[in-house]
Length: 63
Length: 158
View 1: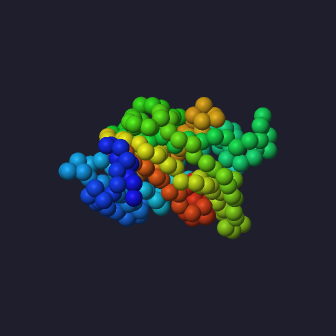
View 2: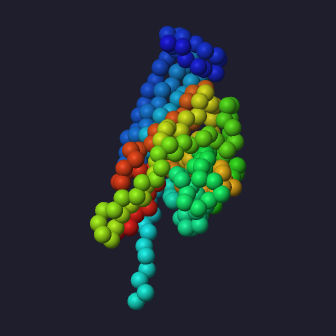
């Protein structure tokens, strides 16, 4: 697979792949990194938002 | 200094004057849906409920990132649903993920501001997430399901 890197497009067989994830009430996030000789040359992140912004709406009474 | 996830107060006020239009407005110069954008902000910025409009202050910068961010598509109009005779919820969610392609953003960022680029860049909402950087890669924000309880933007009565 070809990976876009800071060095240009490279075959992933030449790179070290590292992956990570984070999951909490607000988000479910994954990321993938490709390293070349100890240098980070690619990092992509995918954040799935779980928490919305919500606002209560209220109509006041006259009495 | 920190960003805070919130519905901006200005947006709530502007709903009452039809400044924002996610669907088709009954009375307006044009019935077309407004255009919205999503801009990313550094973890050191302070965008929150008091934010009134897009600003370049504190915005990320880097390779292939354009100031102002990218388009946010609301392909589905807002939905209003009654949950009882006295309560209901109106909600809307972007119909596609927000994607920043082949960018390099080396300073940590942790928030996206959704704003109305048709209406003077007025702010809609701030959404925070864990601090991230991107290197020659893609940053994607996937939306929650567009339901009464999970939609990205909700106005509810109880």
